[in-house]
Image (tube, rainbow over all chains, first blue to last red; front, side, top):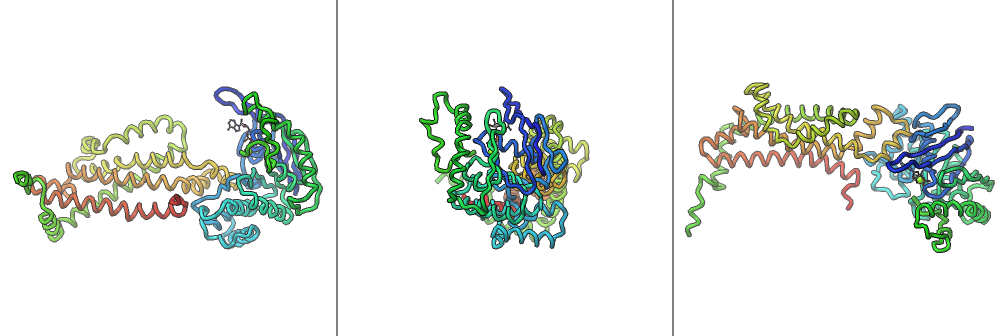
Length: 279
Length: 232
Ligand SMILES: Nc1ncnc2c1ncn2[C@@H]1O[C@H](COP(=O)(O)OP(=O)(O)O)[C@@H](O)[C@H]1O
Ligand SMILES: [Mg+2]
């Protein structure tokens, strides 16, 4: 048992009103488990992840990480974002070493480790490049290597592949499974894409919107590494999609004009099974 | 061809006269003494303004109270040409080096502190979030992330500060110095030697541009290349 979320609520006060983004969330994440949090855009996935990361403050409830209540961000819960958040003033290798440098690890040791993880993401050739010289997929690989160097048991990922083209995305999903098999971290992975969730997760937690709560959990016990073509995954994805249809419509109704229905605007037949527009 | 007579040598000097004067100023050592005196002043004044500007800028970023109460004042003071401080400066320091150095410093300090402040406030918040999850906080967050992330705007602030300092120096020297480029220019005026005035003006432009391009230009290009800011 590594992360426990207890009675967690979060509301945002804006100029006009108060938005209850998360409402009484209770969930546990276990050591070495790969969990996907799945829900329509705007349901509060990022907010939940940020609170677990300690980047945002909860309104009520608490998050307990390895027995201690989370009070702020820290290297035991590294986050990988949708944008790589790499530092443009540092070379690739120095970006990868960044967290280790903060931790006071000696130069030789951290260089060795940085190379090891750059190898894992197949980018040693680019260690002396600057960030703007890399493609989007390469940047996410570097960000992944940077996150791995800190040896945290928990890795938080907020739609890290959402901005990539589908070939690059597939490749990175396969590699992430491989890396997870090697490192056995507790990965908490946020996505709005059903296929991505069933492909990667041991357990998919489906969230509902307005206010954000946990709707249902699905356990997925298929052999790894899984391929996107796997037919069992397609069945599972269809199952989960049914569960979600209602939620997607709820968000859409709240966001679009009142005359909107799913028949006029077949959002669910989106070829990528993205629920709502990817934000 | 009556209009040709409009051109009188004491209104606008001939290029030959200017270069002859320039050459003789260099030969008799006037130029090197003047440049040295000016360089010493601007070096002191500018360094001082960078130190004060950084301290003030950081303090504003760090403390909300200062931000709310001091920032508007600084923005206002920045619009004041620094030569306006000369009377005060002479009252406080007397007719000496310190008075000119004060005018230079105050000319550039505000530009530097405003650049530090806005540079640090406008960095990509994602950098800070990512760094926090990797264990950065307090001083290490500033040193490893916030300062490098705001470096491009800090450098342009330093560059702007330099040009303000350079103008303040010339104005100060023209009014109250016993040596320096500005003073030699004024001597030219007093002797009605317009080619000496022109020669010094050329030197002022050349030195100003040289520092701008050779020092700030190099640093800026270097940073822009690293960050990939020139990829249009
Ligand atoms: N900083 C904020 N201020 C006000 N409201 C916010 C803020 N962040 C998030 N929200 C609200 O919370 C909702 C969920 O946001 P988010 O967690 O980013 O959703 P998701 O990641 O699932 O797409 C948004 O629709 C918005 O209404
Ligand atoms: Mg999100």
